[in-house]
Amino acid sequence: MKPLAQSERPRSGWIKAIRESLGMTTTQLADRVGVSQPVILRAEQREAKGRISLDLIEHIARALQCRFVYAIVPETSLKQMIEKQALKTAR
Image (cartoon, rainbow, N blue to C red; front, side, top):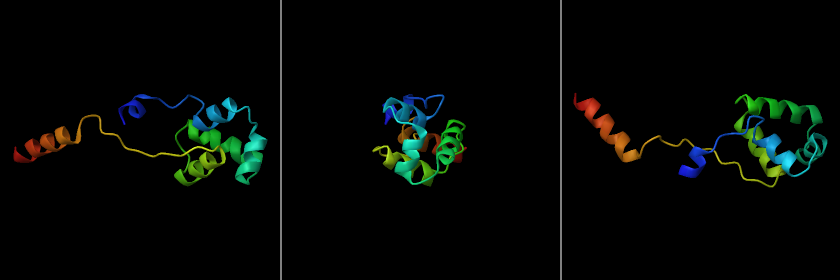
């Protein structure tokens, strides 16, 4: 997971970055998702701000023929986290 943890979300968000890489318009993506074009614009804006629902981003990812992966990646190993917590508790 390290490579994923080190990559940052594009400033404009993954949805817009992938859509534009595919040469797809917001209208074309909206048609694939089954929503109106303004819904896609709002979704892109919300994702860029980190305020999109997991359900919606997963639905859009499928329409882009992508897999949406949601993960919480520890900054250290789980072993180190457990040892640190054990020491804290022991004190």
